[in-house]
Length: 360
Image: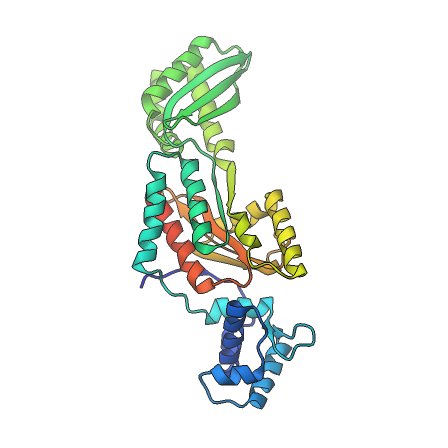
């Protein structure tokens, strides 16, 4: 079994503070909720617990768990449901994350590899989002650096005194345009020489590879090029390293999955708010940006992350990296808090690792 690394929250109260009875009852309440969505009472718990406890003893433990804020009674029901804190404690300390079967791994790999062949980087991201959305029956999300994959052609086009357009064309046809500020009075010949130099030295490389090569050969290029031509190249290099590398692309797939099994009015309101969050994008990008910094799978439950306004949804996401071990994006799912965490966590983890493998 391969290890799935989880990024957990820092908590003062952990599952170790609960005794064996409390852990068993909390686990059963959460697992019942994840399976049925219904509250569970002490009599039903007595039938399924792996220990011999009377309904009265179970009720006493449930009262303690409720006092700790881990479970709650919906309306006047005699049963209990886990709170957001209870779900978090379960995920952090009680959840047994399994592993994908060989068939599931082969299915994920064949879908991504099959769709990736001959496609652009953006196409790979989009198809990966569609794939993980379909397998999880949730919305798939991908946040990644916008980039030209491999450079086919670079050109400086003069616009006005002190300004030029830098055009980057990728091997798959994608184009990036950037306006550069250059020293006043730079002749067209310097821009032509910079164009020829870059095409001769970085054609076929990714942006990150081109930056590394140009920086490594900086002293050599100074000897070959005049000062104005070198300043044009430096301006282009600064643009590649700066705003071009900071831009993000957000892809959301499978929104219709979120409408399945929605019946109650409060569920419809939750979905409406979720769609508003997805449309605004900025807050969602901030949440996924936090996941980018994680070393493994990151889980957000409900409203515990205040950047994301909806309290009734969860995000499970993991970062992926390029050939230089630089994190270039994050992939994951958004769904209700009532998720099959044990199945979806390793699915997200494996997909992120596969994305990294393809990009290296």
